[in-house]
Length: 221
Image (tube, rainbow, N blue to C red; front, side, top):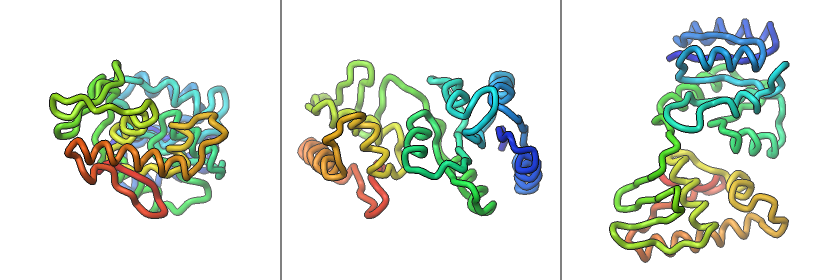
């Protein structure tokens, strides 16, 4: 697997590059965001290991430079920023996973392998799972030939879970993605939203589509 490491600490960048090469990765390394984007435009990568606090162009700038359609590398953010809001912002900006420094190298490698096993996500205009079809341009859902009538937030949740299929989405991430700046939104409102969406899916003949991982979040497997 080919990996791009973007890290401004010379010592950590060198240590990580050597360790990842020993673990079987083909590694290119960049010391700042501008250099990282240059690598991304010139070469194809399976994975990107990205610091957020980079000179010249920070990690969010690098995430914005990734393609919004077609194939794109999986991105693991490796950052000393340990607040939930930092993780939410990075994941909403396009990161696939987030690991806080300091970290265990074995866990880092395991997470990279897990990311590499995921199918490459594309920003498709149509999302399909069995009889369920989402037209993301028209923001409409169908089950077979029948329309599935959803509220705007129910549709947002369903599209979000389908685009992140196989990944557990914590309630905090869903809350930020679906509710945005709604100050009245809460974990309870997410529970109500999920309950309502599940009921409509059940009635349409798709029971059990949304799974609840207690203490972790929700997913569509």
